[in-house]
Image 1 (tube, helix red, strand yellow):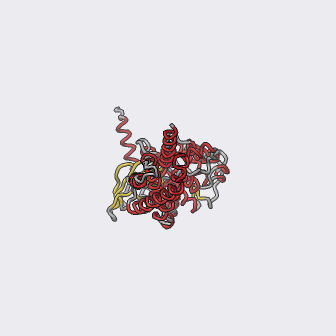
Image 2: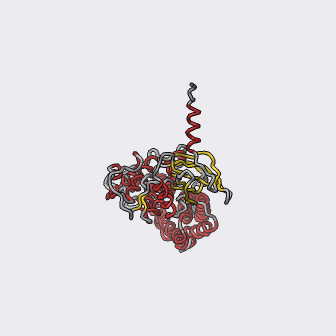
Image 3: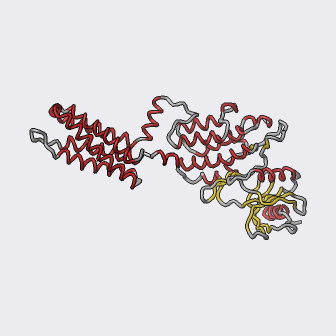
Length: 297
Length: 120
């Protein structure tokens, strides 16, 4: 008897997982990623002649309802920062799939490995807040926000992915099941209190993302992240709009709501915002003092 | 208020303030009125020029440089006029005058008229 090598086994597993596509209009490409619920492939739409991303339920996963729900949730939230769904269907082997826009770019965690100026990263963060705020306005909470679920396009555009575990607030969900990713999960998620989950749970995750985004943040930025990740929901920002606004105020050199300023902080901020003017005024005063001193001597 | 009017007002105020500092030079205290009027007028002209420049050129460093040169030039014209004893005060007038010009140049570049603020 001959043993199969690991490579052969891996190949066999991949081949057996590959969706059977004779009945649909897509030609399958390479695997783009694997999530908890399914596998994402590059596929070519033969009718529209374009590449798309095809997400299909993993072999053995019987939760087709959840996959279908994910597609429905995505279809409900049409926003430039959320990947649009093109099509949903069932393969011949019974697995549910849906196709969506193929996103080109890098994941936020990969993007942050390269050095970027802090203001650019913060503006990017503000753009991430927009689609999430939009989803909240539609009564949908992402619940699994993390850098791996955020794509940054070639032109700095942002796309929030993986809405598979999103909570539709109008639909009741029993407590107990813990949904999310460990380092980005709010305390109410970690405790499995699904009925307590609302926009502020995503605010918590955004606060965690902010902490990882900027190395050695300034005091006001630290306060913003601390407020967003407050263990008590009521002490967090009530929405990602509020969070983005505070980031905007920081970028504009204005006081932020999360950071009560002392007189010294205020003076420091005003000085750093008006360095040129302060330098000119100081130069004038020094000039006057020197001239006065020379006149006396 | 547009940049030119802003420059005019700021230049006049800073010019007047600059003139009033002459009080610290006892030798010229008796000519205070003339100095303040001359300095105000100088600041006003530099302010108008800087405001006009800021309307045409949107650059903070160039605005500061323009204000500085204008301040220096008009301060030279003032300093070229001797006091009753025939003494000239080139350094005392030109050095602070150029910095006041630079401040006006800076301010006119930074100033955004109300319509532009709304557009932003």
